[in-house]
Image 1 (cartoon, rainbow, N blue to C red):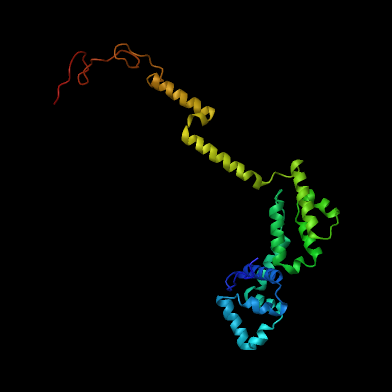
Image 2 (image 1 turned 120 degrees about the vertical axis):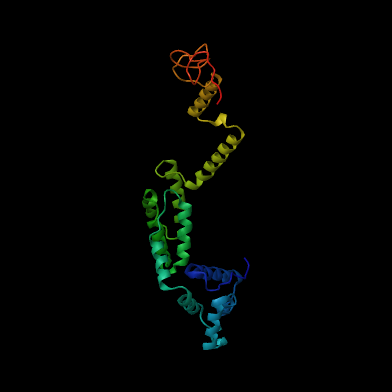
Length: 259
């Protein structure tokens, strides 16, 4: 892992700030940064309005005192500035109401992990996180996970995934949407590709019959009415044929003269 975390400039909102804190703490652990240097290291990544805010703290307390701020106190300070209580309360409500949809256990687990990191007051100690994770599981598997009585999150997650797979196989849960999306898209592309090459082989039976009937109609002359065909004028009509009749005087054999 790179020991230079992403910067924070104060415009990322509550979630952006909490993600920044989470990532920078991971960097501290990997790089084995001494706790006494955490604030100094973290504030070196501040930019924009966040950097201006920190400079104001230095002016008030002095550089040495500001850098010596305990990490937990620093987090409280920057949260108070950029992460309002209303934002935190909204995240906590979303975490509490989080539910597994259908058989999408992977999506549910990822969201649960994200909220646990963003809302530590609700996910610590571990039993709180476990309770929230189990509470949001599908009813078809929830009681089985509860009865296992695991005390850490990893075996609970593995068991939930296993039970979800079994429930899908037994038809108690629907198939995963993510597992069928690719197949549907592939089928659509194949359908559109075959139509672009030759429309007739992929036509529905009714449409194909309609096309064939139209072809037959064209071959038969296009007339589908009930009048008989006249042998004199080769047209379809009823009654006496008026071929050769003058259009002005209506006498047979006469020819109309131009004006």
